[in-house]
Length: 60
Image: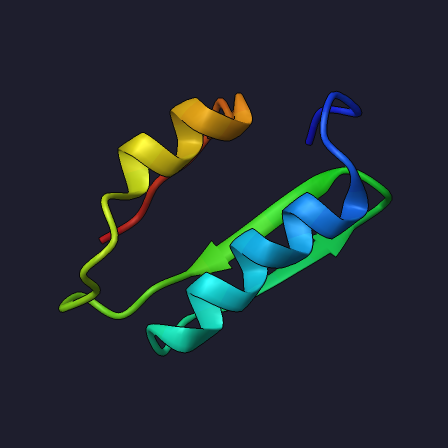
């Protein structure tokens, strides 16, 4: 995760993920793990672009 965004902005993202039945956590101060159900509505690629995430691994 980048320091470009405030913690409160990341929390908004987390709230949206939870709202759609997902789960998220941050480990070691900057590694984000996001789990979303297959039928999740948000466009995850768009969210990654907005927050500058460059995922190293995506699993179906």
